[in-house]
Length: 278
Ligand code: FE
Ligand code: FE
Ligand code: ZN
Image: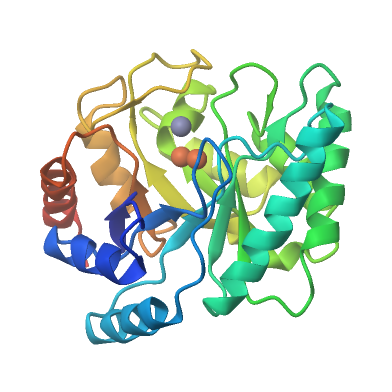
């Protein structure tokens, strides 16, 4: 069965978000661990979590994916920003243990002029420090579009981080279709070749989740601008191939497309479900 959902707000709790995703035909969702631009986090609500767990079981939902704030930069040059990032990572991982462990997706960071090698070192060091062996979560490094000094613009950079992790089998990679397309991986004309390269450089066993987004910017533009499926430079057809590819079809997939209301996601989910071969 296709594991499909979209990004949702959990301002009204996990239980509400789960009901929302079911109401639009999905069976998993993504949420921010805290305010994506700032760092505020809601208190842990045990009643909500219990209702959510029960509802998830009844409705056969796949565990949601938790996304770290965009502003988290594990390789910032600024001491205060770096300290805050380390603290947030530590606290987010602790919170996820209360949820029994989840996928925790993060943008690796931006080296802001220090060079990617230094950035990679700092990111790996922070992850090694915060991730405890007893944790049940899996941290996913998201492949990035390559804007500014973002780390994770290439399979190589992500592989270099993974290589430095002590508990690397507790880590994985999230492939965002918009990002990799913008970064110059041709998933439109050569999906097979991209996956072969992923396997050679990172290893397909690390691929744990997908973000399904079309791209407002052309191939190799290194710009991160999501478009609704079929409304960008990727087009609809490649998404049908992606969701049915034997290597990808069992992975959870999350839409982060720009829509004013849930009905936009509902349409995309329904398109994808129709195109999916069980
Ligand atoms: Fe992301
Ligand atoms: Fe993404
Ligand atoms: Zn993006």
